Image (cartoon, rainbow, N blue to C red; front, side, top):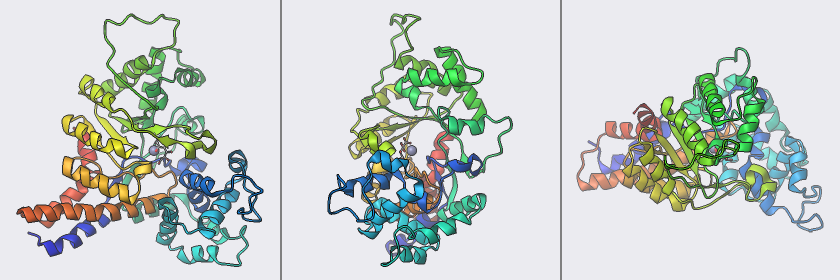
Length: 447
Ligand code: REL
Ligand code: ZN
C-alpha cells in the first residue's frame, strides 16, 4: 500500500515511462517517400506556427516593424516559397525577434533538445549569424538520418508502442502508395485508419470525383460509393473509419417513411452517412472516429492554419449512439465548451469512447483541466491523449508535454482517494496509467 508521500514519485514515474498508444496522428510511413515529414524545416512550418507567424507579421511591407531583410509576404507568396525559406522566416520572427513562449514554439525547443540538438539551436539564434545561415547546422543533422532508423528512434524516445495514421483515399498523392501492385509493408509502428470526411459532410462533388477518378471507376451512385469504401477497407485494413464534422453538423436518423429522392438527384448527406459510412461501419464492424468542432477555412488564406473552432451542438452524438448501438464511436471535441457534455455522453453510452485533447485543446492548461474533469467523471474509461503529430519529430514534444501535464493531475486525484481511505498500490497505478495511455482504447476497440 502506498503512502501519501510516495504517491507523486510513483505516479509521475509511471506516466513518464508508460509505453503509450497514439490513437490519431497524421504521420505516414517512410515508404510513402516525401509524405513522411520530419526535420527542422517541417517543424518550423507546422501550421500552428504559420498561424503564429501571420499574427505578428506587419500587415503591409511599408511598416517599420518589419525585419529589414525580409519583406513580409502575403499568405499566397509565403506558401509559394520553398520550405527552407518559409522556415527561416518563422524562425526569425518567432524565435529570434521574439521569445518562443507559445506551446507550439516551445514544442520545437523541447524537440530539438530531446534530440541532443540544444547547442545547435543556441548557435542558430546567436547574434551575428546571417539569418539565411541560421538553420544550416540543424538541417545538416536531419539530412544525415536514415528515415526508417529515425522513425524507430523517435518512437523509442517518445515511448510509444504504435501510432495510428490518417489515410485519405481522396488524396491522390497518398492513395497512389496503397494502389501499387504490391505495396511495401508498413512499419508495425504505424497502423492504418481510413479518413473519409466527404462522407460525413455529404460532399457529393468530392465523393463522385473520387469515384470517377478510380481505376476502374465506380458508379456515381450510393452503391458505387459503398463499393469504393469497401475496396479501401479491404486494401488498407483500417483500425477505424474517421471523419471530422463540418461546421454546424446535425444528424437525426432518417424516417423509413420518407419519400425516396428522385433518382436524378445527387445523394443527400443523410444517405451518404447512413447508406455508406454507417453501413460499412456496421457490416465491417469498424469503429467510427468522429472529430467535432473544427471550422474549416475560417481564414482560408492561411490554409490548414486558417481552420478555426466552434462550440458544436452535440445532440447528433446522442442520436447516433441510440440509432446505431452496435457502432463504436471514438470522439474528441475541439472546443473546451463541449468537453463536459462529451463526458456526460460517454457516461450514458457504452459505444462512445472519449479520446485526447485535440489541437487547440492540446495546451497544458487545457489538458490539465480536461483530464481532471474526465478522471472525475469517467474514471479510467477514456484515452487521455493523442498527439495529432504531422511531423515525426513532434511526437517527442507532444508526448513529453502531455505526460508532464497529465501526471500531476492524476496524482492529485489519487491523493484524494488515499485520503478517503482507499488502500492504493503501485500495481493499481501501473494498471490505471496503462489504461489512460492506450489500454482503455484497445479495450474499447475489442469490445
Ligand atoms: O484530423 C484533423 O482533422 C485535424 O487534426 C487537422 O485538421 C489539423 O490540421 C491538425 O493538424 C490538428 O492538430
Ligand atoms: Zn488530426
